[in-house]
Length: 216
Image 1 (tube, rainbow, N blue to C red):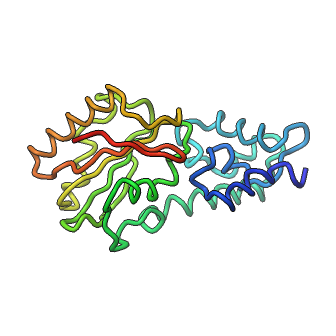
Image 2 (cartoon, one colour; image 1 turned 90 degrees about the horizontal axis):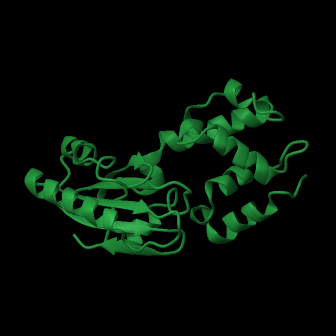
């Protein structure tokens, strides 16, 4: 079983982590499968058992209930997830001093959602020079006006005294062209931004290797 996840690790090295699905990232992290379950099946089993971000809340004992996942591998997985959770700003460019100049800059700062199998909506709080004060995930799930409420998008930006806001989300289908729902959400957020004095600069849609934008 020593090489059953060689492909995800090779792709991670050659294409970067943003090109891998959640299942492939998990396979690269775990290394090998267990008896009767190769690594791709084990990774899929874990994702199905802990859906919608529940894996970030799972403890070592919970993970060890998965047959073949011993304390060492469970602890390694929990440690890796905790490390990612503790350093979102450093990982995604917040406070780096580099402004967001174009959609490609935004695409590069979304490695965690570009190839996600679930739709994730992110917001960038920006200063007057369009430098990133913070980058956060607002919601996970199908994009709707009820799920992406202006209150959830703008409240943290107002607390940080952001001068502007930029939003982005992924299309798991791989096609980043805007949908009618994308346009409706953008119109609502742009109107809220004008009212609150925190203009919405752009809405970028990303996939593993492409991007598009919704005109604000």
